[in-house]
Amino acid sequence: MADRPEYPRPQLVRKDWMNLNGKWKFAFDDKNIGLNEKWFVDSHFDKEINVPFAYQTKLSGIADPTFHDIVWYQRTFEVPAEWKNRRVKVHFGAVDYRAWVYVNEQLVGYHEGGHVSFSFDITNYLTWGTESLVVRVEDPSIDETIPRGKQYWKEKSDAIWYTRTTGIWQTVWLEPVHETFISKLRFTPDVDQGDIIVDFEVSGDFLNKMVDIDIRFGEQKVIRDSILVKEKFTKRTFHLYNHKIFRTGFHHVGWNWSPEHPNLFDVIVTLKDNQTVLDEIQSYFGMRKIHTENGMVFLNNRPYYQKLVLDQGYWPDGLLTAPTDEDLKKDIILAKELGFNGCRKHQKVEDPRFLYWADRLGYLVWGECASVPSFNEDAVARLTREWIEIIERDYNHPSVIAWVPLNESWGIPNVSTNRQQQHHSQAMYHLIHSIDPTRLVISNDGWEQTETDICAVHNYSHGNIDEKQKNEAFAESIFTKESILQSRPGTWGIYANGFEHKGEPILLTEFGGIGFKVGEDAGWGYTSVSNEEEFIRDYKRVMDAVYQSKILHGYCYTQLTDVEQEINGLLTYSREPKCDVKLIKKINDAWHVETICK
Image 1 (cartoon, helix red, strand yellow):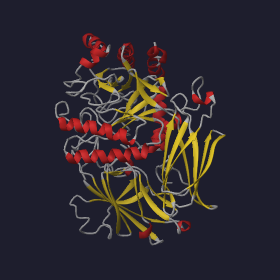
Image 2 (spheres, helix red, strand yellow; image 1 turned 60 degrees about the vertical axis):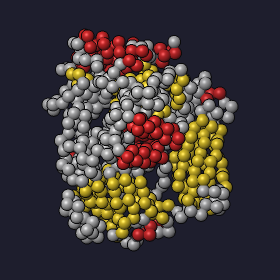
Image 3 (cartoon, rainbow, N blue to C red; image 1 turned 45 degrees about the vertical axis):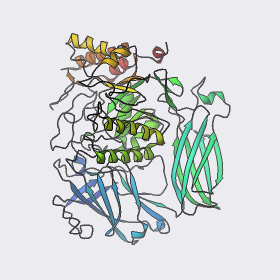
Image 4 (cartoon, rainbow, N blue to C red; image 1 turned 90 degrees about the horizontal axis):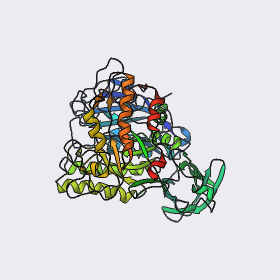
């Protein structure tokens, strides 16, 4: 069985597919001679790699952390005979950073962007015998104008920067579709009206085809509708609540989605030509609304206090790639057992399987893209393109409630006074709202914010447990709106020059980072303790200050796990709790929803 055998696209599931993970031939091309020597034709591959793990990882079978900016992959496959009369697509979950894809010695496509999915129709390149698939990848190790997040541009990890991920790092797979197929499916919930808005596109000869939409809630049939297709794009609104008060969540749990009640509707969309089924997709959606009002965040029209944890999504043996699907699920389960109701996925566009489990288990997610370290016109274009693809991929996930396009002025180092960089921050805010009006957008998480839906503040000034003066100063700095807005994390103001707080909810979205070494590996944290008892006491001290604040409407604690040299996680890098999970949960549970409503 191939590594990561689970279906890779849980929001749009088809019955037929082929997983191409597993052993591939592999080569470094440090002299950049592969194109001239036509490596896509003649084999020059002297290594093997285990896809979907990057060559820097142990699970790849190579485990080489040094710079290799150009790499090549090759494998063969055979298309099932029963796919003969259909189109065949090759899908890549993510390839960092640029990818050229060849089938049977011919270039079929190119993609730039290291964190999102892409695909190519390879039907016309197939021989229907033994097929060759070659991928050439460029990942510039020291280029600071590409979205790289925590991937360091030096060879050795240091401080908050980690080992790079080059090349294929999510599942590669084949999928057959009919000449006429459903090419897009989008769900937009309207909780206020009790409606679900369904958009779909049909590619190919769509005229006068029929689309059947079946919606269920558990075992209950809710909607069955048939639509005669007259145009490529079709939009329909279906009323779900049907004047039944217990479905709305007004006096009852209802049918809405939340971390406490992750209710999901299952959907089957079938495309037919008379009685012949051309395409069938299984999907799901959740009825979830997020908005801000009176300085608070509302989930499904009720004030909701977010207790998030910073999650960087790294694993010791897989780096950005989780070793198994169960590992993605386990991270969510552990976070919920610690008393958190969601996470901020930090500097990483996470695998869709993680979002699937967040939807199923009930776990809020702030989606964030890897930042660009430096600012120029190329960096702006690259980040913009990637965000458009991120939202296209992840729009349907009810667990995702916010987008974070920029973090701590990375990529906009002079945003405080530089109007061009301020325009970039504002442009990202408005761009994302223009293609996704259903979620919140944070313009620059941490400080020097421009236009934003949440005032997101980072503050690590709480000091060590025995530094009484720093402890008191930290508690005071987050106690009132005035004290937070006047604070200067590091040397930065909360808002960029010319911008100010306009009533948006204030959340403390990075703090904590208590360093606690478990084992022999050295490392660092923002503060430090030496044993489990101190760890619990220090965590409680910091959280007490947060809960005593008169203005905070949520937080994001740093962080869920240790990562490489960072030892400031609640869990070790291998996901072992550093203390009794129940004690952390008890501290986190000290806050109740009634508090914010008083």
